[in-house]
Length: 104
Image (cartoon, rainbow, N blue to C red; front, side, top):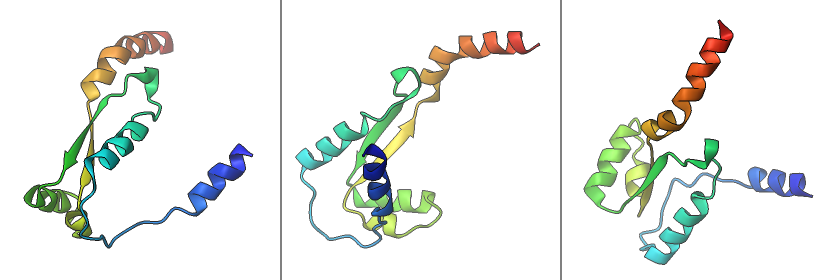
């Protein structure tokens, strides 16, 4: 059953390139973020930050940074998920060092 559910969800996924000019309520944004933060990460350290971007000028800069994908700037809100590698390194650098010693 779970495989069917996952398969159905993946097959029905679509990419949106045209956006309504509607405002997205903060409650909806917060709920999306809350759901997204339930995604697994190594050791559950969740080495990321989510930045909510509503400002048009900042969305334009993000569109440029996304290799000129103009539709990015037209989204009413962007959730920029930013990695924090130092947090992963802090937790896992010791494991990597041990593994390298064992591989010699």
